Amino acid sequence: MIPVMKPWLGEEEATAAADAVRSGWVAQGPRVAEFETRFAERVAAPHAVAVSSCTTALHLCLHLLGLEPGDEVVVPSFSFIATANAAVYVGATPVFADVELEDGNLSRRTVEAALTDRTRAVVVVHQGGMPADVEPLYALCRERGIALVEDAACAAGSTHLGAPVGTGAELAAWSFHPRKLLTTGEGGMFTTTEPELASRARRLREHGMSVSAAERHQSRQPVLESYLEVGFNFRMTDIQAGVGLVQLRKLDEMVERRRMLAACYQEALAGIPGLRTVHDPGHGESNFQSFWVELGPQFPLTRNELLRTLADAGVSARAGIMAAHRQPAYAGHPHGDLSTTERLTDNTLILPLYHDLSDEDQGVVIGVLRRAAESRAVS
Ligand SMILES: *Cc1c(COP(=O)(O)O)cnc(C)c1O
Image (cartoon, rainbow, N blue to C red; front, side):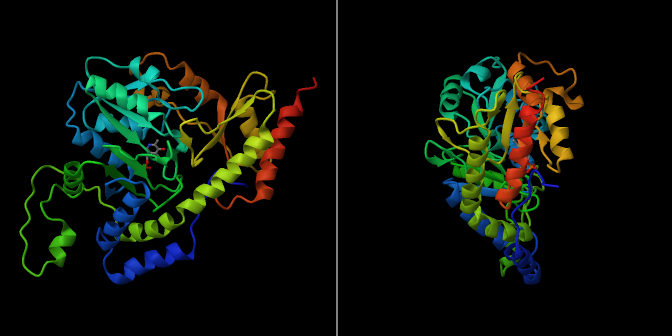
């Protein structure tokens, strides 16, 4: 079976994890601190705070905004469900906005349709690594006095106007789940331009403690910590950070390989009637964390039929990005027009794309798609 995704891990990561274990320091410590420094450099963010996942990073972002019950947070339904759940965690109400057909991301137009007097924040997702057009959203949020959070879970290595995605973000959340490019098993990062938000986030991820456990351990004098506010345990381990440091050094190579494979798909699938491939938008470059195609009425098979045809040929593809508003967790949750979200979620599929995908295996995937395109075209 050709998998849809496979993390690019090797001996170096195994050694890094073993080194952390052998050092005797396995919880958050020096490797986490170094990983934060290197990650901040890589995405050109002034401050980075490592956490246990992107879900906890998003929770932290919304907690830092001090949202209250009744406050609304505009989120895309067209995203992994964690984006919407983060609003619920802080007692706020997620309000689903539609996305643009071209890139599957929120835009000023779709966000404006979801704003109310109670809107306090917007979470924009760089879906599948595709950079969202954030400039008009920042302008809109400034005009309305509301916060913009960037869910960059999938976007490490993507660019926006020539700079890394998330550069200049006051609140951005990243994921190191194996389904993304750079992985630590589980893990996440909060990045910010604001030093006060960074120091409060450091405290909140560690039970609201005034002194970190690492600082207390390294001190020669007894240190009495106090708990300044109710915090969380959102810490990353040094074992994870050790792996993350190796992965981070490989990120440029990962992006380069993925963009090459994406270009091959785009070229090989161009001109198939009823099949549209995802492309870079004008304002940036994707890391192609997900490479999706949309099937139109001219394509002879439905999306689900094509998924079955691919599976029969030994290719594991996936239905496109989910729509959170259709899940039982949000049953009965009111929402406006989400027609583009529904069109994309129903008609897109994600093709295999990972660092070690061989040209031969990619050729197999392309072959199945081409044959499927011709299958019933004659009848
Ligand atoms: C994967 C993902 C998340 C959740 O990331 P975790 O690190 O698994 O918590 C959140 N938002 C988006 C858009 C994602 O793709």
